[in-house]
Amino acid sequence: MTETDFRRTGSEAPAFPQDRTCPYQPPKAYTEWRGESPLTRVTLFDGRPAWLITGHAEGRALLADPRLSSDWGHPVFPVVVQRTEDRGGLAFPLIGVDDPLHARQRRMLIPSFGVKRMNAIRPSLQSLVDRLLDDMLAKGPVVDLVSAFALPVPSMAICELLGVPYGDHDFFEECSRDFVGAATSGEADAAFAKLYQYLHGLVAKKQAEPGDGLLDELIARQLEEGGLDHNEVVMIALVLLVAGHETTVNAIALGALTLMQHPEQIQVLLDDPAAVPGVVEELLRFTSVSDYMVRMAKEDIQVGGTTVKAGDAVLVSITLMNRDAQAYDDPDVFDARRNARHHVGFGHGIHQCLGQNLARAELEIALGTLFTRIPGLRLAVPLDEVSLKAGHDAQGPIELPVTW
Image (tube, rainbow, N blue to C red; front, side):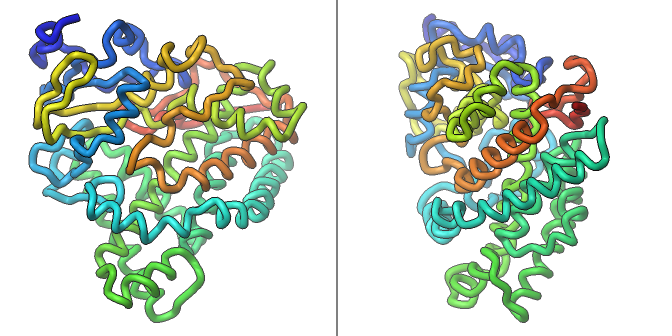
């Protein structure tokens, strides 16, 4: 395919993103975008054309390329979701900034998300999962696995890690849900304002009455020593709180659903507890909860024989990278015994998910324990009746009725 073929107008290129019809399979149109070239042309909601990167090798190279920007505050940074089109130059810490600011913020947080610290909280995660399953079994079927299990696991975990009172979880879960699922920029702004004010007050309270959470550490190490100002601490807390439970909720629910729809694969978990981490990696590859990552080219870049021009919108398809036949044999097959460690479910490069060790711990304990204690878990409704989140959101079911 030639460069001329790719230079279609926005009206000729297909719309992106698109909704899934099967919870764990890419939208049907995505299949057509997997071909001889590692990129294709798509159109955003506002008519802006964008490059969609579909190749695994090309996507990894671009996600590590400093010529691609993550600066949400840039005046022409691409907007994929209509509710965020009126950002007013607001750039979120960690996820919406470039180096050197990104590197400075990330260095402050890396020690708090290391493997050693995540291993230290595994016993409390196990106790939490056991309590939730005790409650589920006591109530009996039918149960919504999202509200009864997938949501409280990461919500409680991130509260404990940050030092946020779990008694406030209903409030911040509602704000987070309204923020990431808003239909308009006005709704998103309102949810953001409520969550910001809550965390603003919490930071001030912790300055007066320190605790032992990650947020308290940031205040003691950075705010009071001048490394961060009050607004930066609040914004970092907001990003960690929302990101720390929103995607993992979907990953737990979608992982459970995928296993229920492949019951022969559940036996891999049951036969060998040591296999659980590998099963989780394959689930992360296969389900691709984060469908894409948004970038903007700062310079001309050659990709697969095509020139991506400076200023172009670039969308890196996590879903299609994880389904690239050049990287995986039979990529559309869920294989619990597959070695899928080089998937890009957590992204790649300098913006690779900071909380991936926490997410892995939550997924391994949640899914391993769920099917060990309820091996006969199954959907209580037909698969096509499971309500799904829109294509521009983190992928997963809104509700997941299960029985046993």
